[in-house]
Image (cartoon, rainbow, N blue to C red; front, side):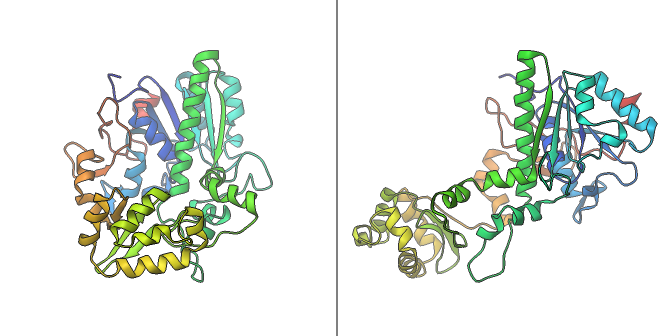
Amino acid sequence: MSSTAPLSGLTVVEIGHSIAAPYAGMILGELGADVVKVENPKGGDSCRGWGPPWSAGAATSFHAVNRAKRALALDLAVPGDAERLRRLIRERADVVIQNLKAGALDKYGLAPAALVAEKPTLVCCNLAAFGARGPLCRRPGYDPMMQAYSGLMSLLGEDGRPPVRVTVSIIDMAAGMWSVIGILAALSERQRTGRGGIVDTSLYETALAWMSLPLSAYLANGELPARHGSGVEMIVPYQAFATADGYMMVAAGNDNLFRRLAAVLGRPGLAEDARFRSNGDRVVHRAELVAILSDIFASEPIAHWAPLLDAGGIPNGPIHNIDQVLADAQTKALGMIQRLPGSDLALVGLPLSFDGVRPPFVKAAPVLGEDNEAVLG
């Protein structure tokens, strides 16, 4: 592959707000598509105000998911603006992605089914809250409520303590990625058949997909899982342990790794103990084993344990703060943190490289409506 912009020549219209659809649009834009973001001129995407911190006149969070785009400010309640957008889609768009409330586009003559009927080669992706059908299909939703509604929050934290959520927008961003997967699959089908179509995904379906393992386990045994903090239900030991000077993650994900861990810790007999011989045994006797390991790890600092675990081939690592992540040599070597040329604005790049080259950061998030003249003429 000779280019980091494999989607060059593709035109995407993003009628999106907040995180999910804008993140999908950013991915497509970073991969070379011409992404035109449509916002209401009365304030635009609410994410523009999700600060501090601020960068270049908007919340840094807005820049994080809206770079590599052009921007139109159109009031779809105004018939002329709605028609301008419909004409742009009809004449130039390959893809439309939208995450407005269910049915919101219908009243403007921009219903996805109508757009595809008018332009059969169009791929239209609907990124809903709860999905395209069902009793909640018209209900709005945000990332935190999906973490709650899907059962994800029932697994987070520790038993006997208040519920917590994943603090990053894991549902929104994953829904954006599923949107991109669906769009690319539909474009591949269009190459074969010459026809586009409608792709549907949602925050709730994305959350359910994250829950694949615990939902499958419950369907098999009918048992509600406990909350294990940094640990997991089906593997032991696979969690953070407190050392003499901080926490570190230790992931002995199979029986061979546990035997190595026992040897490294100077307790080879643990691997032969009937309670801990297999992973299934260790899951049943989690409390006893974790108590033993906790006492051992607490006796020395991370600097003592890390090289021993590394030498034994046992996955491990300190629990980094944000500043430590940015200073880490591996983070720097990957070049994931990208700075806009001629600017102090630095953001996280795509986790993709083509022939060793990551798509570069070449365009900051647009000012509201800055491309109206260029796009609409």
